[in-house]
Amino acid sequence: MITYAKARMTSFFEIRKHVTNGQLTFEAASAKLDENLFPWHKNLMQRAPQTDIWCGLEEEYNSCVEGIPGDASEDEAKDLIRAAVRKFHEPKKQLHKYMERKMQIARNIGFV
Image (cartoon, helix red, strand yellow):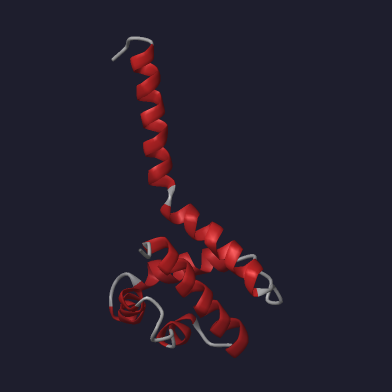
C-alpha cells in the first residue's frame, strides 16, 4: 500500500527533476506529473492551483528540496527529500509513541 508520505516524496522528486532539468516552475512541473505516478496524488497536485491548498504544497515542496544541490545524484536527492517529507508527516506518530511510553512508566510506578 502506498502511503501519503511516499506519494508526496515521489511527487516532489519528480517535480524537482522537471524544475532543475527543464527550468520549469513548481506549477508547470506539477502539471507534468507522470500519468503512472499515484493517480490520486497526481489529481491532488493538479487541482491544487485552483484551491487554497496550493500555497501549503509549494511551501512544503520548497522546504523539502532546499539545500539539495543542483548536481546531486538521483539517489542523494531521493534520500534528502524522503527525510524532509518524513519530518512533515511523522511527528504525530512520534508524539503518540512518547505518550505511550510515559503512560507505561506511570502504570509501572503506580500513578495510573
